[in-house]
Image (cartoon, rainbow, N blue to C red; front, side, top):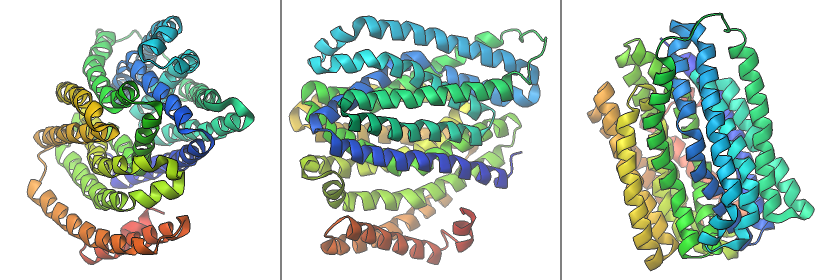
Length: 487
């Protein structure tokens, strides 16, 4: 049984990695928005959305499947670790080669189909983005399977910190959006090489034995990629196809408004991402040991603390959306304000799913998640086609929030059927958190009258955080001991 102290320690390390990624990502986000024109910014992230969709075919759930079986076999039969790593890596390399060649041969045609010929050079360079982006993700998931959260966090920090260094450096040298994309690729290359070397020296070579692979193990690894691929495909479609459709129906400038808003949301949700990444393999191990009550306690505490942080954070994001966009990115991105306000609700849904979703994969419920995700992704696609031409970029945000909300409810239901959550207890906590949020939001809203620049905006946010913390402690949702334990 994995103790709470161990989980907290792992969470702190992963959170540190995510915070490095968040801070470097925020600096990169603001810098690129300042250094590039909205059209160039939109083209850059439109190409990245396309690469992310293509990477569904390179990942195919292989890394997650490897992580699932590594978490199971590392204690029960360590001699099979070498076979799991080698099998999954060869599978991933084969998919990378196929998709990379396809993009290299068809990048011009793809740019023409989207009606954006300026995309062609970005798509050509994107072959390297697809290859090394896939391998970086594979490395992270393999390390997660070993519960080596510290190592996985280090790889994440190297990747995201490298983006800031390389991308901004190449943009300042005058290479524009091509340079920014090149910076992303260089950071992936470094993270991949470091990660593969670490896995080989720490986990592959020490467990290498003259032992044949267990009968049927390769087949099981490959088969489990199917529901994981279905889930990840639907997830990527739901998260990225809206950006592509905005570019198709509208303009690269509209893409920049949408991407700016989604990136702010992704920055805010980093701690929940760290928590979900940390808990997932542990939940799988607890289920394998039949410690369902302990797994339920872990999930309930994680949900409570995540909602305590993120319901107020989402409300605050909605309230301060206008001054945040104007003071960080400038007047030229003012049309992103309503998009950001709508996506504030999306933040809460993302946090819940990040907390419980991948744990379901490790508990063997990937198939059910895949079915639900496929349905909501298809609905999201239809809503985007219906709403974007009629109400513009705001329509993409509405489609995203509504369909992801359905997926979140389904994830909670699956966790409940697996572990038997105490719904009455969680509902009571939700009511308390919502009450705190209402008071905090009202105070922040009236304080906005004193905002005249970035410094005063940060002061209002800090004051709102103080109010949240004080109220949370006063009603017993948070203790000073818990706050100190994070340091």
